[in-house]
Image 1 (cartoon, rainbow, N blue to C red):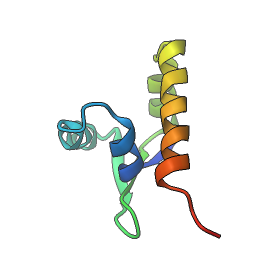
Image 2 (tube, rainbow, N blue to C red):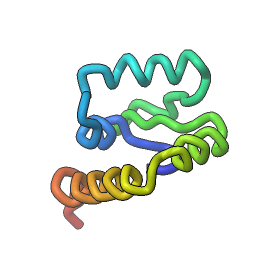
Image 3 (spheres, rainbow, N blue to C red):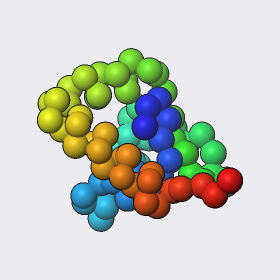
Length: 83
């Protein structure tokens, strides 16, 4: 996850997915993110790289490491592409 992120990947990573759609809607309403496309997967982008960088830099180091680990594990187990 960086300047863009896939909805399905985010849904697998977050702990509280019951509120995920509400959080995404709030970010869209505040013009922090926008939906880049729906097909083949829903993908969002941050409107400005500075928004993504600010959010990332405000994470505690242990939280960053945890998020990186969760994303890596999710990609390995759920999003492996067969060549």
